[in-house]
Amino acid sequence: MTDATETASGPGYRGPATGGERRSFIARNPSVLWFLAALALFTLGVTILSEATGNGALSTSFVKTLGKTLCLCLVAIAMDAVWGYCGILSLGHMAFFGLGGYMIGMWLMYARTEAIVLESLANQPIPPTPAEVEAAIGSQIMGVVGGSELPDIWAFAHSLPLQLLLVVLVPGLLALVFGWLAFRSRVTGVYLSILTQAMTLALSLYLFQNDSGLRGNNGLSGLQNIPGLPSTSQAWISISFFWASALALGLGYLLFAWVVSGKMGSVIRGIRDNEARVRFLGYPVEGFKLFVFTLTAVVAGLAGALYYPQAGIINPAEIAPIASIYLAVWVAIGGRGRLYGAVIGAAFVSLLSSWFTGGGAPDLNLGFYLVQWTDWWLVLLGLSFVLVTLFAPKGIGGLFDLLRRRGDPDRDGDYGPDAGAWRKEEGEEEEITR
Image (cartoon, rainbow, N blue to C red):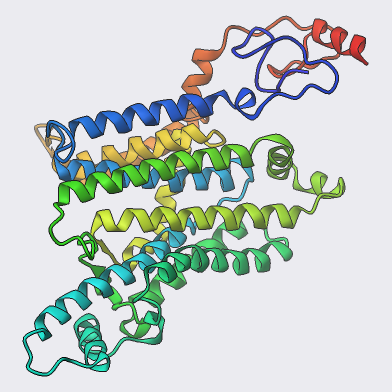
């Protein structure tokens, strides 16, 4: 039997499968190879044009923008997996993204401050004790909010391996606990979306407080200065993070392409389309939803850990509910329910936003009014979302379906009217092989 996403005349078709034959993962997901090839070519092109490794056609700041865009594409893939495939409209995934940034930001800020303190105390006649060094670090970091010592939340900030572990554990555990409480109570639909938004709002309001231990509204800054690399130029740091972001995006695409394919993918999509029927068939619906929700939260945290060293600063505003709403808009514009659509949407809107808000777009003089895009960009984004929802529900990614389509095949018998159903000869071949 052929895969449900291809017709007999479509690309990759090798004739009806005989008994026991199974198609490989790549054969069932040809978009994976196309995506990885495009990502590799894009990475190579940026490397050749960057200041650090190429002819300098691309500035360091623009390479950082591209690296951050790849991180946003990764969290968009995670959002598409949980919303487009599993049907859970989470308005809190940027909270997991921000938590990952905070976890790595704590180490970056601690290590950089430690180097500054040790350098300033090196000329003293009596070497400082570890307690004095720790007190000086605490005063430097927390002095901006009136503190003089590091809170307990910074207990592991001195260790990069432990903070990297927290990048995974903190978003994962929060998603696990929240998801378990919500899914076991069978909260679904708009009520679940409101709960995820409330979780995000509560977290951001908590982090805005000075006694949260994370410097309140000031956030963590100076994250672009990588400890241990004082003589390394920002050009090399930016291209290195760009490579890491590209690798993470490629691995993330492979991971979620595997998750949403095969039997697991069928169950996940079944939950999205008819949760009650899947539960009636005996599948542990809550377990599947909890797995997808937690996995996507972990990936979002990893994306945030790569994003904020390139951004250089993180504060509670990055975790505000509006950020998660933007994420949903990106996925909807790109095409919900197709991983490459999420990537297209995130990249398109992110780069366009940088162009409009960064002063790249010239003001539009209408004679009676001067349109300044820095003020009108969000209006344009909202209008685009409405237009896509009304007239192109499959998003930008749906254009690939139009290009791939070669006309509906003729149908005969009870083999179904949709593009993925069997044709008559396929059914006859299947009958022969039984």
